Image (cartoon, rainbow, N blue to C red):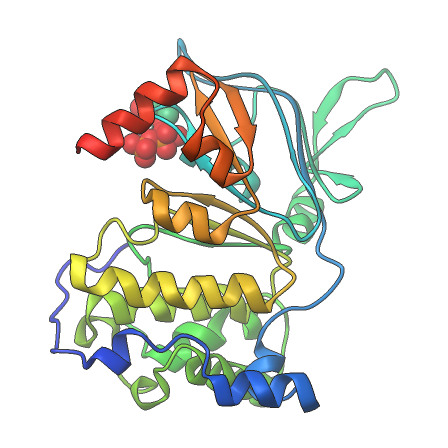
Length: 298
Ligand SMILES: Nc1ncnc2c1ncn2[C@@H]1O[C@H](COP(=O)(O)OP(=O)(O)OP(=O)(O)O)[C@@H](O)[C@H]1O
């Protein structure tokens, strides 16, 4: 339910490029409070796809896909439009069901194997518990349009994590401070620019205290001048937290900055993978070269 009509106020450069303030970083190292406390640290699980198959009717989107993201690693998925990158993230969010294979988050699977070694759907409670570890930021923000900014951040923690209202509000304010929107807590999404909405969406995802953060083309719905602020914020979050991150983006410079490793994905499988400098500088596979050329030309 993305808000459709955003009424951009003219944001100041500071508003759109808050990053994580230097002062806060200093405070974080010394005493670990303020915005520091807002970012998750430690015990992030890894992710593993094991022979994962996903079909939409006759369209086989994932073909026995195998890949892993190590705990605390930041991986970017690149690949042609329609190749299945968003589907990978949606499977991790349990927004889609897989057709075969296993998805692991840490030492636990989203689906169980029965005694005969067959994959069976987990019960709802298990899925719910697994799902709590994973947060996602969407291209279209997906904020609750009828709730103000503060409530967008507190609703999930109170209802799903059973946090007390005071605790949720304190955490939400820490996060709004971190994303540079403390003065907007009473605003509704439609009163914010796209960049501001996306920063609220990032704060909302973090309010759920995920250990794995999924980013799905988070700047592609933004006007060009608003992209940098959101990317800077995410770079800071990547640098300052121990989250395991899986990011889908068409912005190659952002992918270079944010990830330890890039996976080139096409036709349901990983074509090649490596550190960003290698994949963008010396891609080994023709399909990667073609894709990167097409992106540069667009
Ligand atoms: N709910 C659905 N029902 C039917 N087909 C779907 C559904 N969701 C995705 N698909 C199809 O699955 C394929 C992969 O889609 P997906 O959105 O994962 O690709 P993508 O790589 O993220 O693309 P883009 O870069 O354009 O966002 C596409 O062919 C798409 O049409």
